[in-house]
Amino acid sequence: KTIFRPPPPPPPATFRSMMLEPNDPELKLNLEQHLERQEMNLKVQMELQTKLHRQLLVQRQLQHQLEHSFNGESADGSNTESQRWQATTALKNSLRERLTKHVVMQQEMLQHLDALVSSEVDAAASS
Image (cartoon, rainbow, N blue to C red):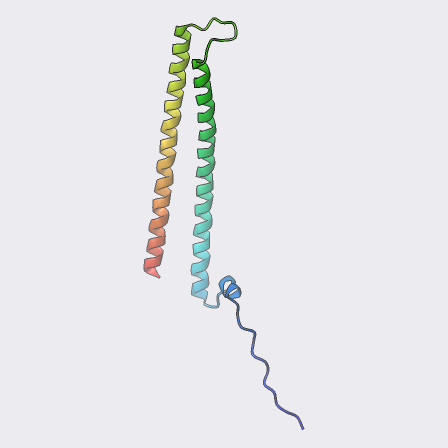
């Protein structure tokens, strides 16, 4: 006597496998587009972070030079008030220029983040 046994059911799909390979082509396309946007946004943020880090390093160097110019004479003892004033003015101008660049970079970051939020809101609204 042969007993008929149906084939075992397929194993239940795990959350991870459903997320990695969605069955719905439209869902898969939306997921891929979303991941591409996230990757692009992360790259832009990393570039901006690198620029800001370089700015910070230069600013620290200039601040150190500025402090050094206030802390005494040159090696041969000939540092006059006029030389100190010229060095201070040059450093202040350099710091002002750097600060302006830093503010521009911050504005770029804010614009990028605003565009990011807007695109996510638009994507959520169209879904």
